[in-house]
Length: 202
Image (cartoon, rainbow, N blue to C red; front, side, top):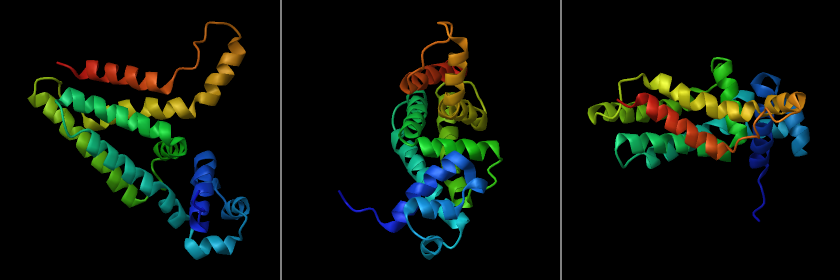
C-alpha cells in the first residue's frame, strides 16, 4: 500500500471535518491534531482554510462533472437522463462526505463554495439542459426548467444521506412495523429516476 503524503492526510481529515461540522466550525488546530502534525504544517501546504476547502471540494465537483459528461453521451434523451440520475446517485454513494458537504452548501446559499466548483457544477446543469432539450425535440419530454429538475434529483439523493440519523430516531420512537425498513440507496435512485422521467414525459 502506497504511503499517504502529509498533504493527502490533511485533505482526508479536513474532508471529514467539513462534512461533519461545516466550513465555519472546522478548526485547523483540530485537523492538525487529528493528523498528528502542527498547525504550521498545514499552512506549509495550504495558505488558509479557504484554500484547504477548495482542495477538498473542487476535485469532487470536477470528477462528478466528468463522470456525468462521459455517461450521458449516447442514447435517446430518456436513456441519457436516466444515466444522468444514476451517475449522480452513484457518485454520492461512493462519496458520502462530499454528499454532506454538498448538502451544507445548498442549505447555506453556497456561501463558501469556490467559483471553480460552481463552474464545474454549471457544467452538469448545462449537460442536463441539453438532455432535456433533446427530449423535447424527440417528443419524449415536456419543457421544464433544468434547475428545477436538478433540484428534483439532488435534494432526495442528498437527503437520503443527511437524514439517516433522523430516520433512525423516528423508527426507534415508533417501535412498531409502521416504519419501513431502511431503503437501499440504489433502490432510491431507481425509484427517483422512474418518477422524474414519468413526470417529464409527454
